[in-house]
Length: 63
Image 1 (cartoon, rainbow, N blue to C red):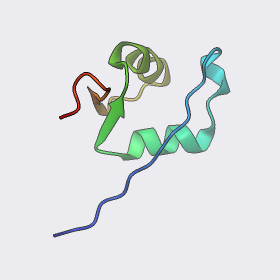
Image 2 (tube, rainbow, N blue to C red):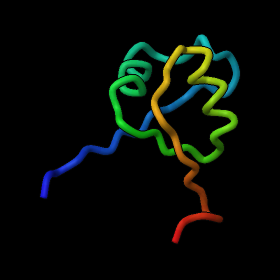
Image 3 (cartoon, one colour):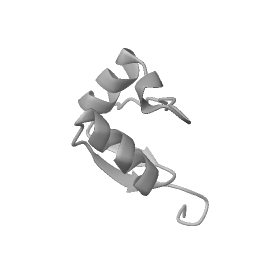
Image 4 (cartoon, rainbow, N blue to C red):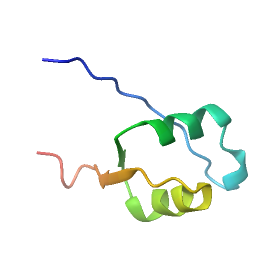
């Protein structure tokens, strides 16, 4: 079994331009992005030109 990595990336709460270069690099390099609300994260990813696949992960769908 291979060991994976989990990255926790802080995203801007207001101005999308406030995201760090390192955060963008991580979001571009991962296979999947888990987001609480994919509608909000989708806007950010679209603005940054990032096409990484994402899925919703919140208290109502954890199992």
